[in-house]
Amino acid sequence: MRLILLGPPGAGKGTQAQHLVAKYGIVQLSTGDMLRAAVKAGTPLAMMPSTFWPSGALCPDDVVVSIVEQRIAQPDARKGFILDGFPRTVPQAEALDRMLARHGIALDAVVELRVDEEALIRRIESRIAEMQKRGEPLRPDDNPDVLHRRLTAYREQTAPLIAYYRDHGMLRSIDGMAPIEQVADAIEEALNAADPKPVSKPEPKPTPKPALKTSEPVSKPASKPSRLIQSD
Image (tube, rainbow, N blue to C red; front, side, top):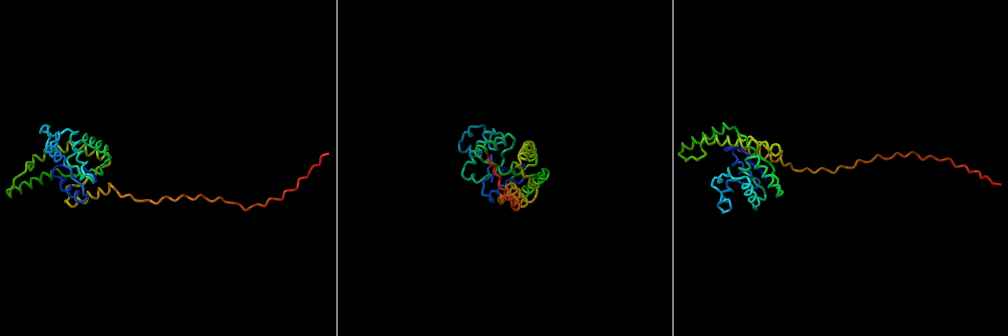
């Protein structure tokens, strides 16, 4: 199973990715994690300006595709993978398609988690209030203004990408605002519909040709003996 998860920040991609990893025995591939690992391993990415990592937002497309290509070649990714955070634009999707085609690999589906942005903002505001009440430290992205900017960026970058995969017949849109279990069930149902099990059809029987009608034998009259003409 080879998938792409699309959805804005707070849509629950991480939760659903963990469910898919456990169910199908595949790996979740985050471009941010892959870029950080490449830098730590001392690959040529370590020589790049720090603005290219760790988020990967400004990293050149060919570099990210190269990192993804190396990662999916590893043994744990051969059974399948979930791409999280890549592609983000149509050019990136096209570059990914070319790379996968070189390796004879095809995506099974692209799952989009649709959400209500205003509901997401209210959700994070409620979470911030609860964390502050408990005296817990806030993360940098636990901020409605930050989330609003990230949602705007996602909408601007990803709207064409959603249309791209829809045109290719690969997009499966799921209501990400439903309870977690319902979202997981909807994703599984969409994946099963995307990859139906083949049904063996019986070989068609040849249509018998109509038998030729034979008429009763007609008795031929006995031929009369020919008269021999005697020559002089």
